[in-house]
Length: 453
Image 1 (cartoon, helix red, strand yellow):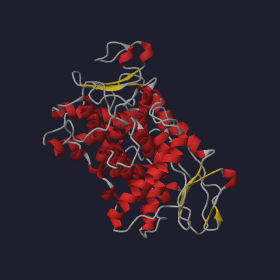
Image 2 (cartoon, one colour; image 1 turned 45 degrees about the horizontal axis):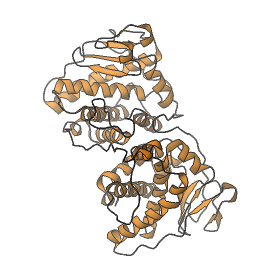
Image 3 (cartoon, rainbow, N blue to C red; image 1 turned 90 degrees about the horizontal axis):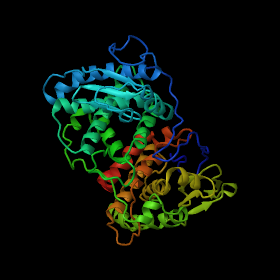
Image 4 (cartoon, rainbow, N blue to C red; image 1 turned 60 degrees about the vertical axis):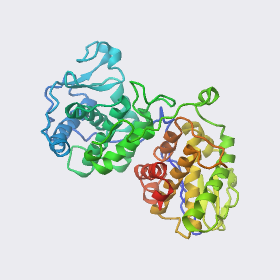
């Protein structure tokens, strides 16, 4: 989901409406559409592709392969100090229902819903009947080359003699995919993704995450959505050199186990009423500790949260907040949200921590307003997202004896989904892209509140 409101200031503002929606982080759908553009110009150097090269998905894959071969021919020597050997075993666009199998696959089940790199045969194969068309429909064209860039990450590992746990291998491949994506955004390639398309591709990592509660030590572990997005953004920001040092345990993976059967039965979700009532109290507790550390002044509690019916919206600074679903009111110093339509929908589609994280972003804005910082700028909005992450870290670490909250598996994934998948008109200019909001939240989780200053 995506927070769809900004701070309500004392001056007139434009009400936001939902412009996109998605399901849960595991099965969410983005409405971002993209026009096929990856196959314009010269034909890719993939004449040896096995499968229907005229299929639109395979045309995008072919353009991605061509660019990935060129990209790594340049980057591999810079990162590893030796020449890059192109992937040469072949490229297989597989239709699992046909029964024709690529090397390294013993049955249709091995390739259905899958894409893989096989080191023993040096081949890349993908399900062109199910997986990639489905991902394209959900997340747009650019998710397809991102998936291929991940598989190329495994090819790079084979050439660099990487050794480590499966989950370490997977998140390093995500990092390499992020490095390539940055190249696709900034350099002249067959791809020219918009910020919305990049956000949507990033959301694909939530769909491809491990099931909440999975063990990071499993031979099939790929990482939580938070782990995968974090590594993708590491590569995007720092390039492939920042991916090279990955070893088991560094960076850490945040795959939490369920601590009780009842929590597992609920999917880690507390009732919505408990979130609406309890999270603001916990945020007040957090800021009562943090604010004096940051400013040397005591924290002044906000006025009580206003959980309202949209047919009877409250006022902020003498003006109606009608049309808003979530906001921090600067002049009257309270957080308000639509508790009848919006929050139940966010809860149903995103989970309990999607709601909690969205409320926490508004408390981040309140914290800066209390510190005398303009709470109505994009930079401040991103700082608010960062402080929401630092609050989540305090819950994760359980370093406040007065807090009664813990994180369940999938909670951090729900939080980053809340910053990606729902967009309001003008949100990007006011609050930053989903990519930037997730990056800010991650910094708060991993580096604490000081990272937000």
